[in-house]
Image (cartoon, rainbow, N blue to C red; front, side, top):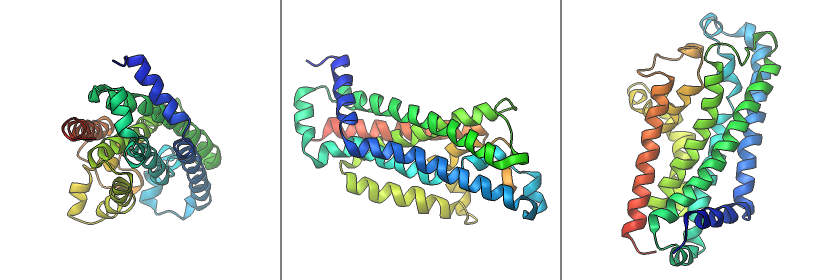
Length: 259
């Protein structure tokens, strides 16, 4: 029977030897930092033209994370590929033959990929912050200001949790194409649009991305946003519940269905 270290080593080998998973993580970092830098520079140039209420609630930390909206999609693709490739390639039968304990197999894979996504997320978050602040000029903040370090670390946690949520959903759906067809439109369109629609906005606030992104906000109601019924840690807690539910669902599907 396969040991835990052997399973973890096997999953690490799978991830680092597949070019697509490596490139998606690199894309998450580059896209997030580049878009955040561009919008920070734009905000510096346009700051005096902002409405008064937006200048009063300007959040320089949150602005430097503007690229997360696109960067998280690369994290979604990474999470989907890590699990979905097992099914699309037929490797799932070989993997389960080598590791019959399905819980050990699934959570070994999730542990390795999740720690990797978290590490990349933290590097991305710190880079986005420091590059963004450098481009904001006189409107910047510093890492030792109140709640700023929490927001920066929270940005890394957010990206790692997005990847874990995607892994859980893919384990339930057992298909990379189906998972991408649901998750990418959900995070890129559905969640963003519903958050702007009166009435639907109250429900959208509890979506994993909307709730989790609260951890990256330092100024309450930044840029004129509506008040939220939860704080930064409450929002992250809601996102964690989504992740736990997705991973539990993925385990139940893997346990009860044939490979």
